Image (cartoon, rainbow, N blue to C red):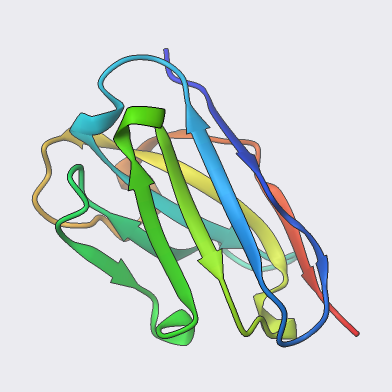
Length: 127
């Protein structure tokens, strides 16, 4: 059983920054791709960023490219999301997730390809 715990969310003004963390319990964290998703009220869950098991391939949704950076520290079982130049439209519940398939060479984009999820951390961008 894997448990994921996000932290680092909060209220920030437009143009500000936040760093989200997601700590995973259990073994073999380093074997799996990880992803960050977000969900705003009344909207579908959407892919934000993901990276494969060794960090060798990283993908972002277009609207966050150049502003967000995903990274992982396999020694700490942790994946991060550095968010800069935040905009009001980034407001959402941010969730981290673990890919269901080990050693996948590509980043998965759809929620159905992730089998473990955290509870999420709220990010609110407002003046």
